[in-house]
Length: 241
Image (cartoon, rainbow, N blue to C red; front, side, top):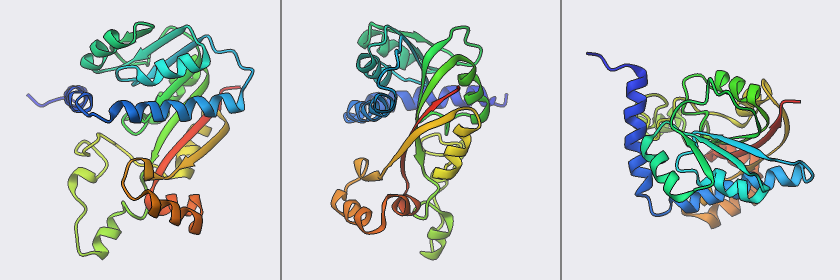
């Protein structure tokens, strides 16, 4: 019997969850994301009172737990498809409620919704953000900027190579990314559902060696041209009002 898309993605993410949990640097990366997202929110909305937060695709809950502490929120709900992530999260973060299922169809309302490296994984990113808008007053997103010169197929062709299949967006992508974004396309997507309050870019030096090289290129080219060349991370704060 042919495997359905839902079965494929469930199997993929359970396997991916096991790999990620074994990664010794995972918590460092998650705390890095949480700090950037929380600072973006508080620097723009210092007086906003946040009582309830949800995170869609929140894995074991490290990001929502950290942001919840920073913003002093009491109601923290993590929606996660992986049963393994939910099980580990329940042991680690007792103040977070884990929902092992999709966010779409959620019956609760929240002051803040978090999507940290999630929109690139879902089949319909537009529909997901529409669902988040219907339930969340504010949204924080961390989105990878992967449509860049360094990752383009023509760059490989110029080198006489073929881009590996596991780096092509779709089911076979090594990280499960179904699509890539530029800064413009990412902001356009968010802007269709939320008013973008603020955003900023971070170059890829956090993830890769060569921080001095990235620093030199950033000072020479500027951050946006550097992101066009090598990609990066986009942090976005939006409001539905």
